[in-house]
Amino acid sequence: MSKQVIRPSKAAPAVGPYSQAVRVGSLLFCAGQIPVDPVTGALVEGDVRAQTEQVLRNIGLILQDQGLTFDHVVKTTVFLVDLQEFTAMNEVYAKFFTREHPARSTVQVAALPKGARVEIEAIACYDAEKEHESAACGRSSAFGKS
Image 1 (spheres, rainbow, N blue to C red):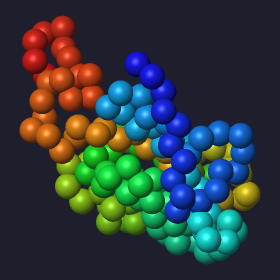
Image 2 (spheres, rainbow, N blue to C red):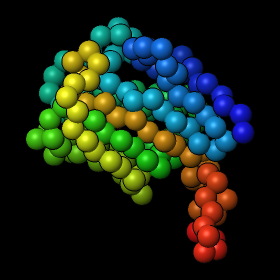
Image 3 (cartoon, one colour):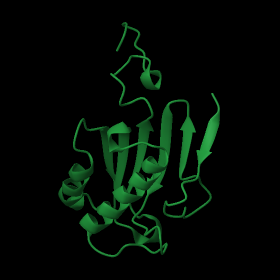
């Protein structure tokens, strides 16, 4: 399989030498997004709710660039500088993932780029909206169709 680097024109600029997203087959790997305003490049000020909202908008811009929605997301990883803010982050997160929720991991980290309170990375499947075919996103099972 070949790797295709995705460079969404409307997404927030990368904060380092990495790609905003990479497509491999039916999977789109979105780099961790922090609450950077895509127009100004500045960190969005405010509490973890405001920052989570911007992070998910940034992920949404990447998904939209590829003709995808949050329904295509199959896995996220949330990085918080303070797990005491989990509930507040989760309230905002739930507004973006309203149907079948993706798998998710949440971890506390010592610090994030630019002093952000939250970072979220996502993996989306281009075939996720199809009728849960066993071949979608390369899913297969040793025990038969999944």
